[in-house]
Image (cartoon, rainbow, N blue to C red; front, side, top):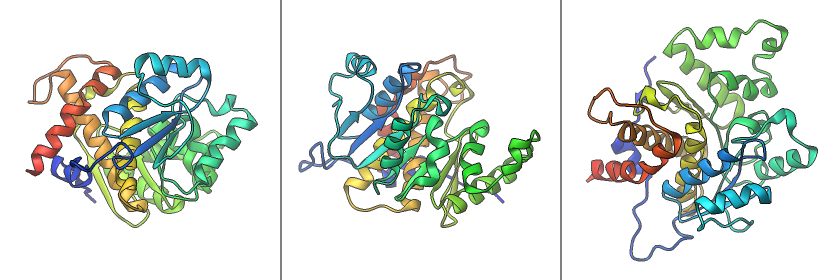
Length: 296
């Protein structure tokens, strides 16, 4: 079972080119509740991804000490609540250290009806979503999504059948992603060398735009921000469903992967070199332009 590869032209079909009539709200507002005092960098990196991923406006909401770091990096960010077309939650959070108040806040976001990108420390809450949702786990995090859905409950008994399944190869990974999407009623983006994106409708695709140099700290935080920006732009134009959000997630993954290739000097098949998460974010506008050029 081979998934269709998501290409630059596919990404271009989702991305929105601003017009003379565009303004910051028409281009989409993405809000992030990410990072923590333990992991403040995740907030900075997610905001950087969102700001460079095409959103008209980026909000960040959270601890005032973390907000100061966000504003030092990006003074255009609004650190308060307001109009939101899409959310990003969970990056840089630890579910084990989460307070009841923080849990309630995250659940309120998930139940707001707005599209939500759920990452890292909020994955265990994804089943609470009442609107379009996409989860963005790597292999080790996928069980956090599945166990609350009644999938893979044996994982907690010591054996790890899910990990065994994910090691069997691409076809089994695709099957796992698709069954998780159906159970969730939302989109799943399973990170990997071949990133798999699946919607509960049966739609699925694979993104191979990246490079092994992406295997470095913080790049997942940037990815969540990019997906949030793309989703917000789509949602600003009209309602979107789970499949629309899956395609926005695949587009965000393509932008992220191509930006990494550009940052690593590997865009033309060269061996490349080490990169940091901020360098990936810095190349997102160039990746965005490359996608739009592919459609022209």
